[in-house]
Length: 152
Ligand code: HEM
Image 1 (cartoon, rainbow, N blue to C red):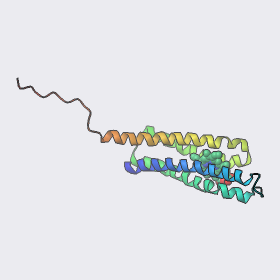
Image 2: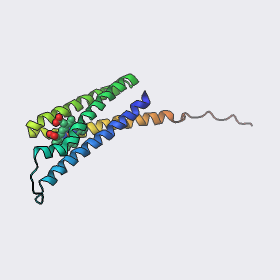
Image 3: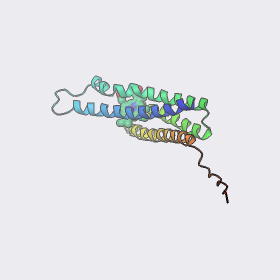
Image 4: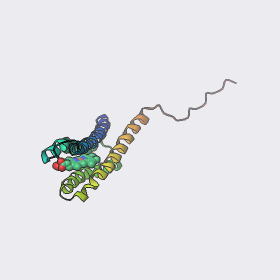
């Protein structure tokens, strides 16, 4: 279960990076559509086309983050790390709320990408520490060896 936990941490991190990339695609798609050389201004349909991937994939990221919490509980990762998982789950839910509210109140949208940075940093630190711990556990003991008895 600990192995699944480690790989899930990495998968979630990659999904978050992709999700940020999809937002970039949506933004540049919209910018491209309103370019002076493009005859038609962007329509709602066009905007949805650019941001559709981000909006849809976002829910999978949130789901993957919540599953990560469940895997963490089953794997018995300990209280401290579970606390970070709880915060991560809350931040992911907040991320959806910020998207919904930001749609009506654009100023709130400011916090959606900023929260994405916090989510990325937190997931990155969880993934890093879990892989590091596994590596350290694999190393042979570094305890000092008793000196060989001399044949004097
Ligand atoms: C952890 C990273 C992120 C997650 C999980 C996430 C999640 C979501 C979700 C679930 C939605 C869809 C809400 C809905 O319409 O039903 C959404 C919309 C949106 N997100 Fe993100 N997001 C992330 C990062 C970002 C970043 C970095 C930006 C950069 C600008 C961004 C910009 C937007 C915008 C503009 C929308 C509205 C799109 C629309 O109305 O169709 N997101 N996001």
